[in-house]
Length: 226
Ligand SMILES: Nc1ncnc2c1ncn2[C@@H]1O[C@H](COP(=O)(O)OP(=O)(O)O)[C@@H](O)[C@H]1O
Ligand SMILES: [Mg+2]
Image 1 (cartoon, rainbow, N blue to C red):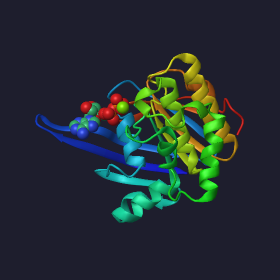
Image 2 (tube, rainbow, N blue to C red):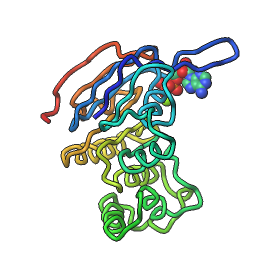
Image 3 (cartoon, helix red, strand yellow):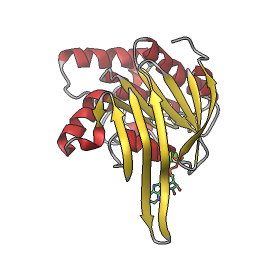
């Protein structure tokens, strides 16, 4: 589902080039729930943005769902992202002037009848019925994170990428997010979570360590039967 080979991503800054990714190689098979743990500044967000086609690697190859992402045209890459990837962000990134329902619908490449039915189902499943017509600014952090999760799930993508998805949640809400991602994985999805904390590890089929832009350690394997 994901193949990164010797991926380098440098950032030009005033003092000189900073390495976001420093020769990172990674393989994620369909149906895995991979957690990458790394401290702040280790390259977690750079990795996810690169996998999402939002950031072009300085060198190296990135293949996601069989596509060499960075060889696609900009519009093909946008289409690819709309249909293939679900993103869950630490800071939710909800559209502040759209309601909960509209934010979740915005996750669909096309809001057709089956997509709308799926969104209605997700709103119920995630306990957001009472809040469906509310604006994100009026929600608790846990509710906002459930909306962000529903938006990623709505398109039924083959891959979900999550950047510290529970960084702003209490442990009960955090476990709820990971349980729902695990349900999605069991239904055939693939999950990659990057995080600095340990919360996601119990749900992982594999835990990797990221330091200074490189995978440095495979902590454990096959905790969860695939
Ligand atoms: N746009 C940017 N410009 C300059 N340096 C950046 C930029 N984005 C990330 N970096 C640097 O790349 C490294 C990795 O950052 P990041 O991927 O955000 O780490 P993490 O998400 O693990 O905290 C850090 O040293 C950071 O300062
Ligand atoms: Mg980050």
